[in-house]
Image (cartoon, rainbow, N blue to C red; front, side):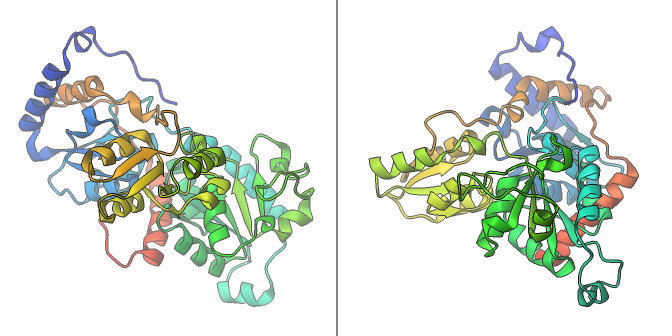
Length: 399
């Protein structure tokens, strides 16, 4: 996590109304030179100043399409700002209002760990059959690395440089289908739950998936692994890795990991008419008990298209749920959990940090600029372009 220095004391002395008026004034002064992007999980006091709202990749693409923009202030987390820097021209400066706004899931896979895992997996797994090798016209690495866009730029670049691609929660299945035309195994980073839920929906059984734990020697594949389908799974060894179709990185979202089977059972008991709608970053057991599972955009669209009187228990970040409650009073909407499922790192971006950022820009100073080095940017863009070429026929603004 990057360190965010304390703000000058004057910002703590301002009221919310004073900060709001000042932010609007700074936006007026900067005009079309400034674009503020707000992620769906951002708190309302900040997102009301956003020019665009959406998920991480959508916002980065929107930012890249703003031809007059000199500054993009990304009210999200660090990897999102990196993605915006990857997709925008070098003349555009991408800014994160609070440098400590990271992502615990993205931090669960660093580049040194991934490189070590890659060495182990490519050494362990046999080369593909001659037919596959001829079709691919290369020496035949069987493992294709796929990373969720909720990952560091270095991980995206690794995948781009090793024949892999990025994916989002909405296109993960299409990307995995593409990956299996390139090799016979997938290493899925960094969220094990999205990888497991997607592969299972494709018909890949749970016993053809193994978990790589970067904190253990050889990923822990010499020790017993518990699987979601049984209390104790097989004892994986090198042959087990060879038999696997999907190698799941042991990472997870701290927010979506808070939703449980017991919460689903309680909803069913309290109100059998209530539908359970969850994000695929939730655990496999939760997704199996839900009525519907899909990306953030899928969740929003499902609720918007539902008839009045619909009842929903939603498994995702609380700020988005509260926004849906406010926007759809004709429906009954609640969190699946009885606790506040909050993205605490994104919560660090508040009005004070947003105002400070804009004050500095008006004064001619760029603070908290997020920059991806040229080599990492080039390879990360390869991974993003592979995803878009295979699952999205619409052109997007990339360099």
